[in-house]
Amino acid sequence: MLYYFLVVLEFEDIYLLLAILATLAIFSGAFISKLAVEPLMEHLNNIEALSKETLHELNLPISTIKTNSQMLKKNITNEKDIKRISRILSASNMLQERYNELDYMIKTHTTKELNEEFELELLLKDRLEFLQGIYPNKTFNTKLQSNVIYNDKIGLGKVIDNIIDNAIKYSQNSDKIDIVLENKKLSIQDYGRGMDENELLKVFDKYYQGDEDAKGFGIGLSLVKRFCDKQQIKLSIDSQPNYGTKITLEFK
Image (tube, rainbow, N blue to C red):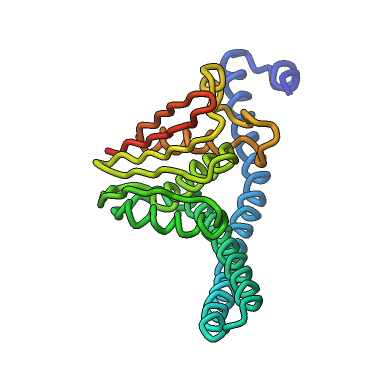
């Protein structure tokens, strides 16, 4: 093309020619990019719409299973049948949690503001009730004061689940977890294996696991750290080997 302008058309201003060619290249690139991106955006929008519709359809059968199981449990006296119904309820609660997590993930991508005012004490009681069903042999010693905060309620619930789940996972020889909420400060103390200074430096690294035998992928505390940084929650951790670990969240 440069030869055509210089020789055939005898175009003399080389700088003007280069400017014209650069402009043509930019417009051509933008046009080609638009042709490539538009189908991809349409595909992503279709996936998002399908995800929302699927979640909406899943909520009804989950609620139906939970409601009917609770009604059946009231009229059953046989111990074996009560245990079976309890297992169904536990499984449906776990399905409900997965539903809530997927719904939350979609909302974080489509909504800028997820914060709301809520009672942290009630959120803690709700999460502890759920976790008690998963870990019936663990004892949660609680001292909870009323604390109203403005935060991402669903995201914070996931953070609390992760911290308590980690506390349980790394304290297999202890059956108690202490949870204290006062003056907008939440602390969760376990009495497990604890960590030394070297482990504390790595504890928030993605995929790090202090105990290779522990179940999980080592991403829990990494997610906790990222959420706390985003929500401006002060996160601190205090731990000693063979004594246990205490994680504290301080809210504004």
